Image 1 (cartoon, rainbow, N blue to C red):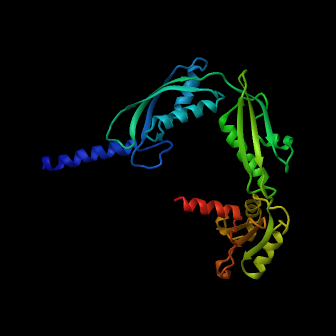
Image 2: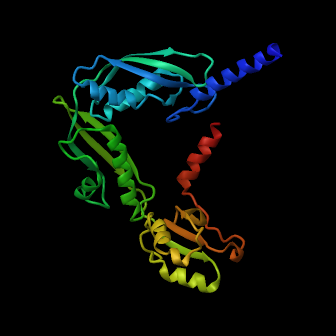
Image 3: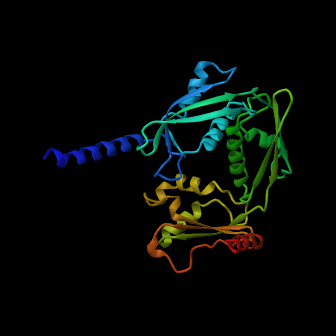
Length: 301
């Protein structure tokens, strides 16, 4: 009896070990069959950070799971420092010290040697080739101003804010290319090259509902056909017209068709599926250059 139960006990212990190790605070792995879990993080080499600052930075890694790749984790460490303004940070060394080799993901202690370098501040933010908005308006939307600490994460946040702003007047194909220019006095100039693309306008609104309900929703819709399309309007419309919509209605019940050649956006509100008709869903129509790019991509496979 004892001999037959021993293998089960061992298997149970192994399973429990792997299960406990697999509890990730944040899981940054592409798959769940490997990787590491950071159980401790020791950092040396910095000269200006206090022990409390280092503790906060390393604490952001402890308990999280990553790919078993020291180069990738080194990039994440660099990004963490750049988010605090240390743009020229160098990760001199990063070592994994594994614990239980049977656990999935593998628990590891990390030792890193980091030279943080100077802390950069914003010298200037320039917006190049912008026409729809003034530079002053774009600067108001950007979360970093002259004299602020230059934080990598805020650049990404600023680009997203600008994308939302342009989306409110129909620039759905907006592209922004950031260029960082470090100065000799630990300052950073950020140049943002703006490619606005076409301005999209409001196309047809189709409300799939009973006649009376459709009429009320059509009357509540304030985007006039032919006016610049507002990419945020649909969410606002749903929130402001809850009494006219079914309780389960959400953004998933809205179909949007983007016609690139005509620079128009058609919208369909699927309020009552029983009223739907064949082929009423708006279609996406790509521009010729987009089709050419897709064809080249498919041909290269």
